[in-house]
Image (cartoon, rainbow, N blue to C red):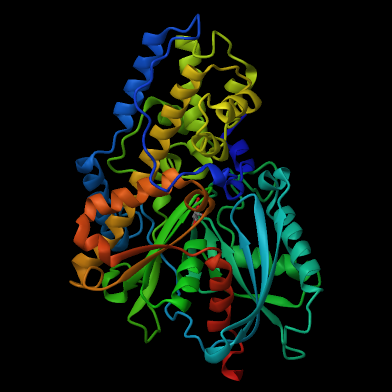
Length: 509
Ligand code: BGC
């Protein structure tokens, strides 16, 4: 089985038993005594755990190095294409929504195992968002590895069915094409606000143009793919804005709060974008715009400098569909955290009989343990860790005693801690770069980082490690200025707002 299987693990569905969470600050468990599994080789298990913890450690100097490297790689990526791992994609979003947008707009969000369609009625400055409704459809797994037409026809069909049911809350001038903001959460080389070429698939997608040529869909204008599929469905709608989910989140969050300068997605995949000055982008395409700023989509999932990686990360990467790519994403995002834990537990079972010598098939199956499972295990506060035991049994097929469960929790915590702290260092890297360019821009006032994604939303330990790392790096007084705010589902509204701001009919408003 390949890494692609992981895409079936929807991080958005993380179902932590919230009633059991005591406070948000997670107390790392102390070293455990482990004496009750007969055939376990305790010294071997402990050695694997200690090595793993040491290799994953993120003390302040490591965090600082990561934050500095993020800033440097951002600059190098802005200088010319290929200047660093960071693609630093020009979004063509030069004008953010003002609040004056009016009318009905659609948004379509494609970026994981589900796609989401939304309808929004905008009422201008006084009324803002008058009505919204949305539907989420899960994408059959085979379409994630099928053809471009197959995937986009399925999406356009779902969109057409949703568009049939407009209620009286929505008004649209007769005879005018409906407009759509298309959130496409993969690396796209944008060629304008409403066109872009897919650079590569991430998050386990591998859609091809034809079955025999898996590379062919890389290089297609994704907006043309969707517009053509909508036409095939007889849908009178067109794409007015193509946006990444991080960009949509920034636009949506800034609509309500003008201090938003950065947006970060931490879900199945990960990404960040921020407001950049046009004159700080040496590789800027020739632009006919009055705006002094734009949004840069960093595609930080591809970042790799200075990360504390282990043999488990390296093997997972080597066996993935995109070896050598998306290393930051593979270290911090929801698609991969559970899989790293599974690999460590498998090694402990093989080399140290952690589960009494039993190595069931499930434990050997890549992605059998998802991030929602490791998150749910970490919420277990019972004495015997009963929930941990049943998750291990149901998902990995192993029977465990309390000692083994404590070791498992140590592994989960190590992976969540490294992920959360590195994500925090990445955020500081972006803020630092912006502040270095314009003194006072970030730390001279309140600055908001808009966060979205199931991992951030639903994994309390991960979230608090992230916050800790930002505070550690910035120190108490600077970090007071930085507000890290959950902007749930802003990207849908953001895409609709950007469709409105870039409407083909905007002069008719
Ligand atoms: C993609 C980004 C996206 C992120 C979060 C990554 O895999 O490359 O474009 O923003 O996931 O969805």
